[in-house]
Length: 182
Image 1 (cartoon, rainbow, N blue to C red):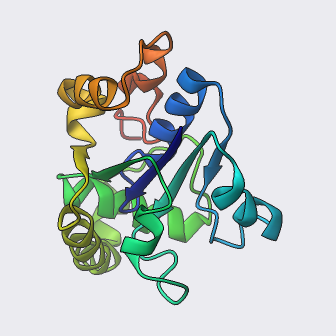
Image 2: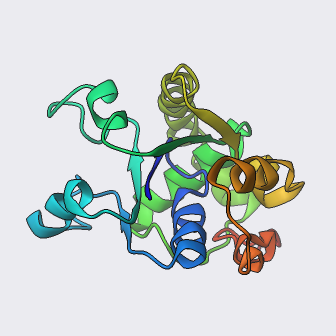
């Protein structure tokens, strides 16, 4: 099965992709068009592998092809956003500042206050990306309903017809940003 996750940034797309990859015992390719993450070989595998989970950011391929062409190359497509734009924007602003996107971290209230302009810029950017994702005619899920109250996990399980064995990988305790501020 070829599965595509189209997501905004900082909404749990990598964790969702890792989980689905484990459940389906197939490769996970994270942001294949991001040259920092992947090689030409990884980008080629996105379209050649029969069984693969791929996560793309909504604007990742913007100059290469349209979204409908990409969607049509997959068996199942899931849209993922995070409704709490404030938390997404804090995460994005911090990740950009430290140039690290997939490690645990915490931020203080002081850091948030000192970086409010950067956070506000990210809120505008992420709101636009969320709107783009949610406008697509695909299965729509949200971060809060996967990692907080888990309602959307059942939607994904039913959509993909899987019997999960590794659902613990979506535990909110594994999120990158630690809740206890320092």
